[in-house]
Amino acid sequence: MRILLCSEGTERSESAIRLCLKIAAATRSQVTIFGVTEVEPDEVPLLEAIRQTQHAFMAQGVNVEILSKYGEPISEIDRRTAEGNYDLIVIGGETKPGGQVSILSQKAYEIIETLLRPVLVVPVPRPEIRRILICSGGGTYIEAAVRLVIEFAPSLGASVTLFTALPGPPVVISDRSESEANVSALLSSNSALGHNLRAEKEMIEAAGIPTQVRVRSGLVDAEIAAEIEAGDYDLVVLGSKPSRDVFSDYLLGNMTRRLVNWVPRPVLVVASGITVRRPRSWLERITGRGAGEGEK
Image 1 (tube, rainbow, N blue to C red):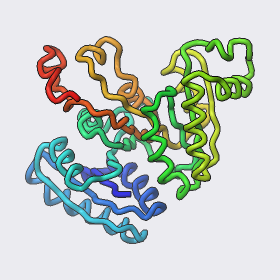
Image 2 (image 1 turned 90 degrees about the horizontal axis):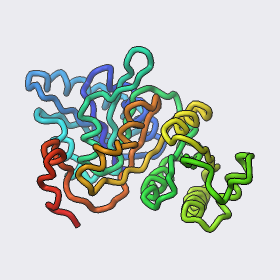
Image 3 (image 1 turned 180 degrees about the vertical axis):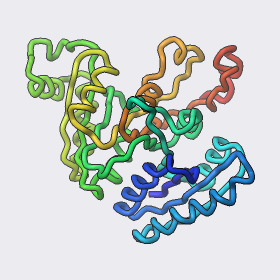
Image 4 (image 1 turned 90 degrees about the vertical axis):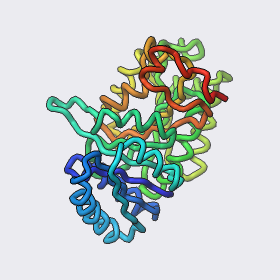
């Protein structure tokens, strides 16, 4: 893989750096450490900080280059990502007092929306990546996330849990109370959800990765949180399907955005690959201007 590690050269980037190093060393990936500062005098100390990070990666046998830039972070990261054709972008995060998780920068989710590439957000450290939770709504848009996990999970010795949260007991399993029976019934059903979960499970197992399927019923956000806590997962994987409607994010909220902001785990967000127009600015979101530009 080709990995772009975005670092601001401070302690807040350390968790992202350590996790990126584990993945890169295990998968023998090519890494670019990219530092961007909006304050020109900070570029020299930033470059020195990422040089030290480079030495740590080289000591683990990772092929790594470093770049620093003065400019607007999102634009520079977007430009660098396009030029380097990276498979994974890694950014840091931080934890607020009381355990509330926030993103390293308020611009982090905008990075996810802008790049439409896999972005790994690391708000808290995890010593190893052994248990991976893939949150699947059963849609085909999660397939890109599954394929990316297959690239690095075997090298890390990780197992995968495919998880889906249902808003209420589905008809196909309404008369079964045991979770194992629920999963078995769902996977053997002819429903679109059952078909897609079967395909995802088979794809992961074909790569030699131990895989299980978990199903919960209730409020989706709450059930995902409960599953993360119960399973003590090291990495949470989400699919992202860009909205084509100007007001849907405002009216319905964006579940991926909410999860990225409060899950106390490293979170990997993988865009579906659906071709959409460029991300709308806040003004376009409010007024609807630009809604038809570039849409395919």
